[in-house]
Amino acid sequence: MPTGTTALGNEPRELPSVAQQFVSSSRGAQLARHFAVRRMEEWGYLPASDTSCTVALVVGEFAANAVQHGRVPGRDFGLRLALDPAAGLVRIEIMDAASEKRPPMAPPPSYPEGESGRGLLLVDALAVRWGAEPRRPVGKTVWAEVTLGVPTQG
Image 1 (spheres, helix red, strand yellow):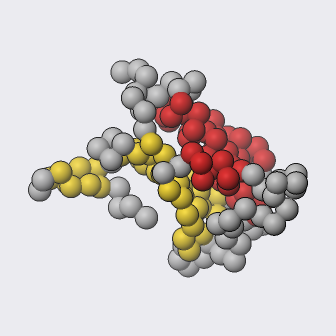
Image 2 (cartoon, rainbow, N blue to C red):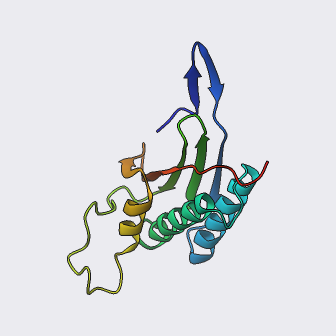
Image 3 (cartoon, rainbow, N blue to C red):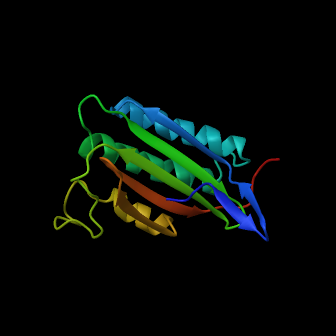
């Protein structure tokens, strides 16, 4: 997980980032997506921009998976967004409390006939890279890095 700073020459600088907890429910997943779109707009990417739409799609997929597969009763899930204009990326992280349930890194056996399992294929197509890592003492972080387009507003 990135530390939130980067070094240009000898001067470290803080990267713009935001984190928020959400109730592990379908409503919480929806609110996480809306939160991400609002934050991207504050960072200069209009809701209808390619960058904002891509971030919304990735957040929506990861949040829905956290609710469906990573839910632990009584535990929320977290969202963290970190903007790195110098690298041209936004990092999306969803943290949940289920350590043992990791996302598959390959299409499910029922693909393409199955009724689910395509969301991570979309993430794979839209993200520069993505993955999952364990969190200590419990849980996991599923993350993706998405290319930033040109900001659409000041």
